[in-house]
Image 1: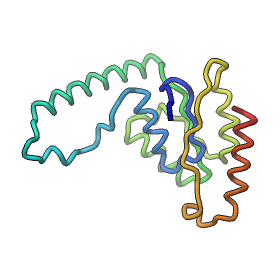
Image 2: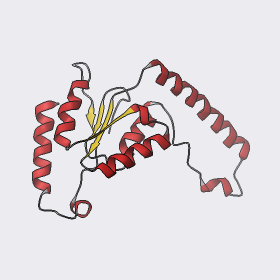
Image 3: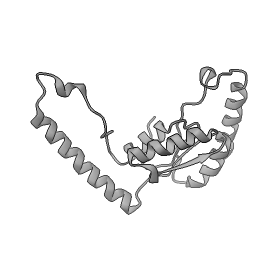
Image 4: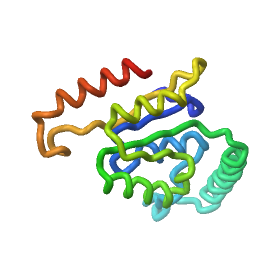
Length: 159
């Protein structure tokens, strides 16, 4: 997306929170540390090399924690119209260790964009990054044109 890791980021259709959580990890310079990798069972796998990589990640984690303590964190907002989605997104962010970095809101996309535009300064444009609903996800296609149109007008008016 070209996001610079410092400017505000808005995900107005957050669902389970994946984009906002990944943005928080990216802002802190962290990989997804809870992952396991199948290559560790390959015959050519070198545990010593992997240990040095993990040591470097640990340094980045320490640096990221210092950034977090120092308040050098971008504004990341995420919303959805579903209470269930917001609850899941908050839980997922807590498990990922970034819950305090993301402002979750239950709101229609047009309302979050308007509210989040207050976080944008004249020197910072920010980005709207999302995976908007589509027919299968919403179980209906007939209202998507209006949703996209309303959302586009809200972005144009507030960003």
